[in-house]
Image (cartoon, rainbow, N blue to C red; front, side, top):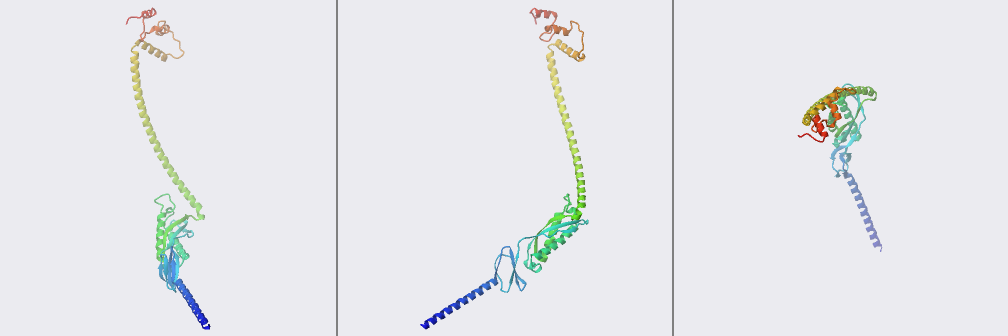
Amino acid sequence: MADNDGRVEKAGARLWRRAGLALVIACVIAAGAKLCFFTVDTGEAALVTEFGKPVQVLTSAGLRFKLPYQSVRSFDSRLFVYTPAASEFLTVEKTPVVAAGTILWRIADPEKYFQTVFDRGGAESRLGDILFAELGAAIGRNPLSAFYSLQPDTFKAEAILAEVGRKCRDIALRDFGIAVSGVLLRSFDFPKQNRPPLYSRMKSERGRLSMKFRSEGEEEGLKVRAAADQEKSRILAEALKSAQQTRGEGEGRAARIYAGSLARGPDFYTFVRTMQASRNLVPKGTTLMLPADSELFGLLQDSSHYDRDGNRRTGAARNNQRAGTWPAR
């Protein structure tokens, strides 16, 4: 019985030793896996170093392997926006201005980036120095009108900024492993103490330009009005010509109608023309002394003074009419 108990105790001890050994081995394996395997996330770049010396650069996401004594440094490879403070510069005519830019950048070479700037703070410090030098040099080579102008051939801010961006991109990539995606001009103004006189000069310049444009507009307005008046005169002349032509044709036609109508009663026509002439010759309120046998009295006293054809009747004809008879035709 005692022998059986001893064997059971020995078997249990061996089992515990095996379990402890397996646990130790699992811990060693886990520790080794943690020291030898690492992951690279999307939007990151990893740099494997061996006693501070870069030995491997990893830019794609996934599970990676390294030796236990090696270290891993991760960098964010996404796009960064850096907005340095505004600085004062002088243009080519020694006009003081305050300009500020914005830099869009990302890590292009993690190894060189790690060796030169080490982190984001160092990178932005170097980029600020580069932008300050290149932007100041570009402003110092150009007049103020290249940045403030209403003339398209004088305004060159976009071309100047593109040149500044190209130089910043070349320097940053060559010296620090940084890819500059763009350089923007965030602000461009005058120092506060210099703004009133500069604004006065700009106002006078704009006043001169406005007077020039106003005079040119008035000149063009005079030309347009003169052309309109000329066209108006031509249209009125043509209309008057057409009206006179139409009026002449109408008067000729009316004269023919009058002549045809009055040809049937020449004596009546003579009387009408006489009355019209008397009306035109004798002023209003004039008293006329006419003989009793005048044409006017004959018409007033006898309505049959003219026959139906407008001819003046003789005394016999009128007597026949009173008697109810008409002369034979």
